[in-house]
Length: 208
Ligand SMILES: C[S@@+](CC[C@H](N)C(=O)[O-])C[C@H]1O[C@@H](n2cnc3c(N)ncnc32)[C@H](O)[C@@H]1O
Image 1 (cartoon, rainbow, N blue to C red):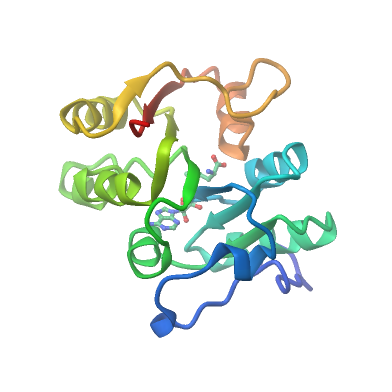
Image 2: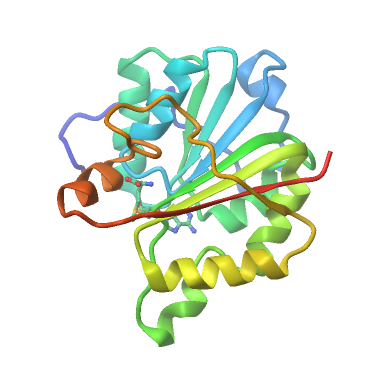
């Protein structure tokens, strides 16, 4: 079901055949600007703000829910942002299939689904296999930022990240100059802040 009728996700929706192999960002964006990637973009609020703030960076949002992905792509089209694209896919699969080694300058994961029930924990995005993807695709010096409101998931994230020595934990510096003391300015952050929820953040850097 669409979030709004008459969404036009093209041309901001990046359609990649499953067998296309590794992509060339240059072919997609027609420049060699640094590429940043957001996983689980939801309605695309962060991606839009970041692409507006940094016109000399390219942005890819991966979102597997069709309604949200189309909504975000439609917003990118309406804002005429040539430096942003949405992809409708499972991030782990799509990264493995299509994202070249050492091609991403920053990875953003904001309010990933916490899957609170113990029997669903294996569905959580932030696991060692995901960190291995991050290590492969980040450029030297590239940064992975994660924010969550879920204390239990954050404990898990901190443990998995601490044990993963190939990426170094660094101070979390907000990726954007957001208003009102927000960390990242996503829809979930704006919603949860009204509920007085607290947030946890972590950042990891690939060695230079
Ligand atoms: C809790 S929402 C947060 C959305 C947005 N980041 C925000 O903060 O407003 C998590 C989003 O991640 C998407 N998602 C979860 N796992 C994903 C995956 N493996 N690949 C792509 N998208 C995923 C969900 O569909 C959902 O839209």
